[in-house]
Image 1 (cartoon, rainbow, N blue to C red):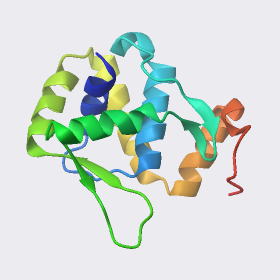
Image 2: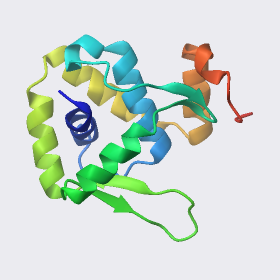
Image 3: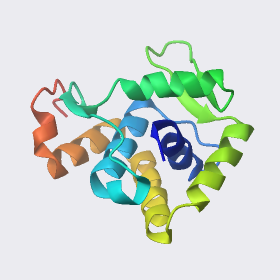
Image 4: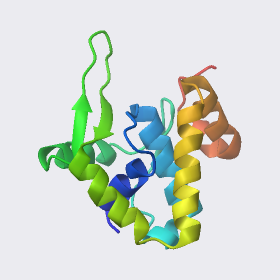
Length: 143
């Protein structure tokens, strides 16, 4: 898998969901850290940033996937950030990619997807800092 295909597979593990940037960043961070060999990774270069592990390349990939009509970038009035969701074509492609993974990797990705979506922003960032304290070094988060 490459960067774009791991993004598609990760997002496809929950049908029809719209993701915030922090959910995507933390989900891909956990996949890269916890199961890199299962997905041909690590794929990203996460660095400690304002709210924990961050790789700007993820946004480049999301933009490319949007241009390929596989991801929809959702802009909501009043928000300073975009949200992201798979198009029907992106979901179909992501499901195929997810299905190509070993069962353990597929289960982990599904579990981590559910994990990042069930927590609030503050809970998610705090949980990452607890498990990976080295990612807190440049934090502006005080939650």
